[in-house]
Amino acid sequence: MTSTGAGAAGVRARIRTRDGWAVQHAVLTVTDMTGAQMVRASADQDGVVREAQPLAPGPYTVIVTAVGYAPVASSAIVTASGRLDAGTVVLARQGGAELPPPGAWTVDPMHSTVAAVAQHLGISSVHGRFTEFGGRIEIAEDLEKSTVEAVIKAATIDTGNEMRDGHLRSADFLNVAEFPEITYRSSGLEPAGPDRWTVHGELSLHGVVRPVDLNLSYLGTGPDPWGGVRAAFHATAELSREDFKMNYNQVVAAGIAAIGTTLRVELDIQAVQGESLPTA
Image 1 (cartoon, helix red, strand yellow):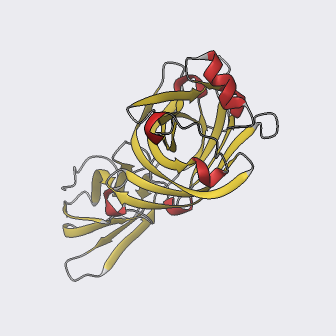
Image 2 (spheres, one colour):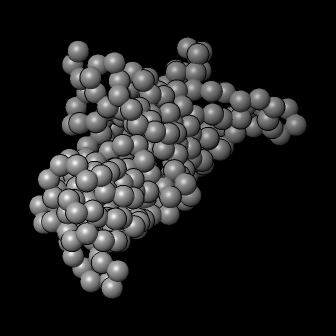
């Protein structure tokens, strides 16, 4: 890292995540070769550090820190201009895991899928999905305090077979007349590897509330054609029907259950940055 010598004296830097988002709470510190602190400045809302204090010519160490991110240190040479331009400094999440920038994100049902798979007759699988749902994600500055809330309309189950769907809506399974909504509320978040997280939360299904963990992968963030910003996630979980008092089963030949008791849940989610979805 070397100063450019162009422009006014002082320190300049842009602090960004790997996805290019501003790190608003970053702190840039400049020390001389004895370790004495010469400059300490915070990034503004655009992740930009601007400090007018000129520096004497010579070598310096630049250190950028931010809560939740791994610190970055590098050397710089200041010329007679007294200017140190650190350029763009990229910070990685502590432990290497990333999530979208802090704030509210709204699940887009039109570009998301909430699906479940159950074993059928012990030899194949039945795939189903819910067609009406909504949710909100709040990414916190302290990532482990981020939250997720979701509501699913139970009656919108669709397995591609009208007779089977009617049975699933009945009191034998979802009992949508008495329990029209399935809800999930997170209670914690912890890193599980690069770009992977474990979401701890409670699922309310069929009138029963039980803890359920989601295995979450963050797939990235980018602009959409409507002028917004989107983030993509994939999550999985396994549920036991018996845990939620859905004990119905029909036993066919050789004692094989018609429908397995374990459900594999698969979520493919797109979320739009902001408190609501675009109306256009």
